[in-house]
Amino acid sequence: MSVSTGAAWIDKSASGMAKYNIFRSVNWGRLGVIAVPALWLGVFFFIPFLVVFKISLSESAIAIPPYTAIFEWDLEEAYATFKLNLGNYFYLIEDDFYLDAYINSVKIAAVSTFFALIVGFPVAYLIARSKPSTRVVLLALVILPFWTSFLLRVYAWMGFLKKNGVVNEFLLSIGIIDQPLVMLQTDFAVYIGIVYTYLPFMILPLYTALEKMDLTLLEAAEDLGARPLQSFFMITLPLAVPGIIAGCILVFIPAVGEFVIPALLGGSDTLMIGRVLWDEFFLNRDWPMASAVAIVMLVVLVLPIMLIRNAQGKEEAHS
Amino acid sequence: MKRRSLFLNTTAIMGFVFLYAPIISLIVYSFNKSKLVTVWGGWSLKWYTELFNNQQIIDAALVSFKIALVSASLAVVLGTMAGFVLSRMGRFRGKMILSGWITAPLVMPEVITGLSLLLLFVAMEGMFGWPSGRGTGTIIIAHTTFCMAYVAVIVQSRLASIDETLEEAAMDLGAKPSTLFFLVTLPLIAPALISGWLLSFTLSLDDLVIASFVSGPGNSTLPMVIFSKVRLGVTPEVNALATIMIAIVALGVLAAMYQMRRQTKLLSNHE
Image 1: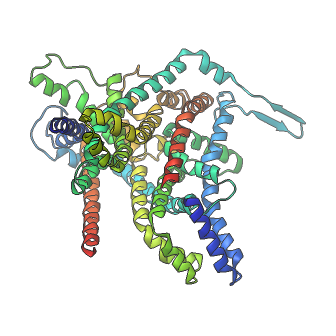
Image 2 (image 1 turned 180 degrees about the vertical axis):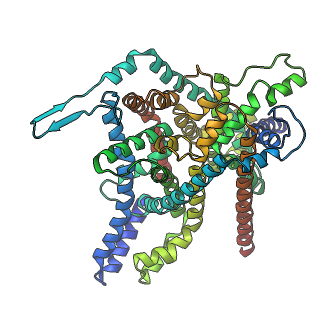
Image 3 (image 1 turned 180 degrees about the horizontal axis):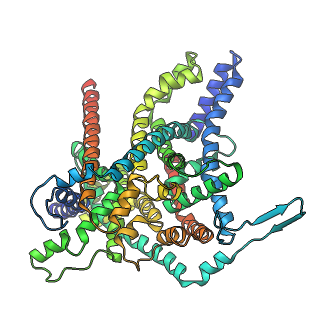
């Protein structure tokens, strides 16, 4: 629908302008509005990927910049060489370290996404079913942490989870444990950190789906003798599926490539691919290897990214 | 029915506790007198004084503010154009690809965005001699690129919700496209531009990963300084800094909410 009205808008402006014979200037304006963001994104978003791909095919070298050229030529000496190096990719496949990092990232992201759904659903449900005036307040409470610094929110968990931190002190004082639990620098802390920071991304699409739901359906089910739990699983949950899918993908994608959370909350053995890329680049200064890691990460994420784009497209078609 | 809603309320309240408990404990401990971060030694503003005497943090905050101001403004201009491309430009060749480029930065892992932009800047410097070296300028370009995606999406949804007949009426009355934009469309989408600018500003102020890749020596942003401090453990100065930042954001959101409520009330009074 938006496409057709958009087209109508253009047609109208074109016919309206034709009599002033500045038809061309209209087109120039339109062209400019399209060309400026297209050029910017082409140069600073699309071409960078080609550069990453190119460098992933070169070899690491002690030079500035630290990689070899793929294509070299010299007109005076009349030579040109072209060498592709697939070595980085072979190394990625052969070395268990990288494979483990990919598998572990996907695992950590998937488990955290699941828990974000479990925690987020009741919150979204409560907000969607509350009075409009309370709803505004509750929504603001969900969005508020999203506006505060991500880095500082992850940092807050360090003080919360560490050996003599708030959680341990509390559990010790009420006598549930006698020894402080080791929580910081474990995978557990990474799960908590991911669920915590990406929870708003889960709650908001769930809320949108639940809020749109027609409540008379539940009344009808009740009149027909359905128990609350039954109507929840047979009506509410299926109607929330678009929100569940959108929320899960919005949490899963950034979680796979996450760097800050495993770096601050995880242990040295918490392998995640974002961290591997970071170390490969900043510690080993192996730019070609870091590029190869990035390209494979993109391949892993292509499917969920396509899914979310499709879902967005459908949403637009509906509205 | 009653029992289920009790269960639901409890779990939802636990969800809110989960969201706020760490932040609240961080705020409380920022007023802790004791040097040991976890031992309560009474109330004190000592860490705030230390924070304001820490030249490294002050300098980094200034760098970050400058970058956030410029990139948020650039992102609003470019993002608004991109939002128009998505919703008002009709069909044209390459629209699918362009709209992919516009929204993809939203879901791109930061490490990939950072690495790819750095490699681009290095390659461009090798080929054209620009940008010579990296620093504030390259960070601004990087932040503008990922913030404009957020602005584009916000502007697009605002454009979809406004009444197109207003624009059509203006055109029927002979408004030129530029007049139409500045006198009709722009005032209508102004709220989206403001929230897009604010979101870009906070995203830029908060970014650690991308800035680390594309910054040069001596251009540490605030998140980079915070990260290098907290990597080694909890520091009370950062608690104080976090409290100040959270307070500013909370006040901003409360003000926005108050404004929205007033507007809703005004509208309902009209009806």
